Length: 388
Image (cartoon, rainbow, N blue to C red; front, side):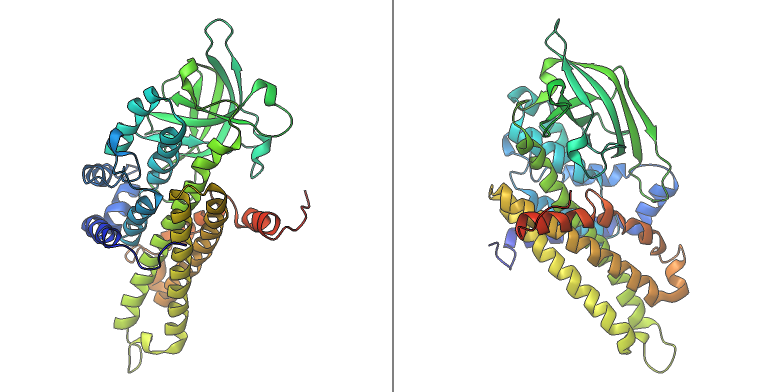
């Protein structure tokens, strides 16, 4: 079990990242989104300070920490109103997978750049006809008999940040695994690879990281584009998916903290009758409950990160799903209560909470829905039978 009280190093990291986030804040992120741009300045400064690669091995330019430290970074940036969603996919998913299973050449090619922010990598798993059923992935890799390389064919949807990523880590399956149990293979696909097309999806979500549909039309890849072993199965995939769920929880907790902070400040100052509205239990109690829910979600997130960093992938999988579930719900409720506390002001651009109504739903939907997490817990933890 992870310690309830954070180490001094963790507390120092949290304070330093919070200071960075507060220098930028929600106004900066809002300006970036409205300009259809990317938070390049914040990304670069976070990288320079060593925050983006805090989880990556020291011998490849990282901080030598784990997902626990990276989650602190994302949570505190989120609590300041300027989360960096690409942290979830680039250092957390792709960096972790390459660090654990990549060849020495792949590690030297990618990890230093992922750590210092000069390189970014997207992650492509979701498909239009597979949904939450990863076993229905149809993106197929077949061997090139002449070169020993690969041809990759398929489609992906809702893939974040492909427009700025130097490459995308694509989850496919070998040709002989079209049927039966999923045997995923992971390939590094450069953004300029021939036959690799991207189409932006028009989203209501206001975020600097855009969503894309990908089309892979016989994309020719060298043999060394494969990460790890083609027969390794689900282990390599879960090496990326567990950190993704933990980081999504951090994203949600940070966002919920930001919204709650705005609502608490407003409730202390806004007076309609004799006392500030925060003195009334109808306002104070829901905010207090939102705080409790966020703190509980954070504890499960910390447990999941601790288990993952300790190498217990099975226990980390259960905890990561629970953390993501709890944090997604806590975030949605915190944002909703914060908007309600501000009344009409909660829907204005000035106060910056209205856009979070849509954004907060992300943690309930992605990377896996809360319903599928309930399926996971009921089957894997409670041992109940499956309905599918």
